Length: 195
Image (spheres, helix red, strand yellow):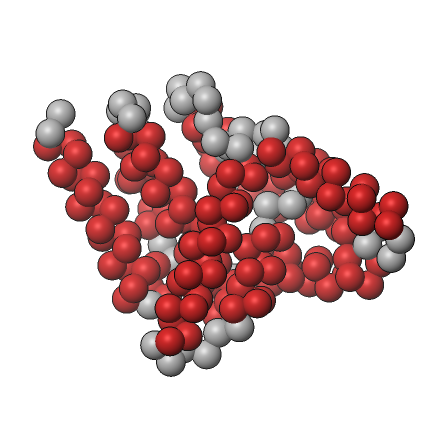
């Protein structure tokens, strides 16, 4: 792989620092976190969860967990963040096909490493391995942590995030994940009671 290919890839990924998470904008949050903001905290959460579960005796590859977490949103550097509500209009299949094509084209320049990274991206998307299941759960947990953070700062139109069944699944991977989600919901209930 050439220095130029590496630099081009990293420069393109830099777009994630500029692209806001669209779901927040749709709900009226003007200074929404960027996709890169989400990816950073979600990657840290994935690492901490993986290390904690490994200590409990669950056979996870934390390095793979980290790679999945770091790669999971790369396609958004080309197509942007498509909010959940848009799936009704563009269809989940079209969104997934666009993301797959974008990630394939971006990673192709990285040669055999790009192929390896694409396989990891696909592993996250299919969600069948233990590592992918954990990272998918961490993705949702991080989003719900951000929902609560926005609600603590005064945004009150975020009920859809708490009631959307898609945001409530994937936590049965381990009781620890369910416990974290319960803590978030309890904190939100306490916040709602103080308003």
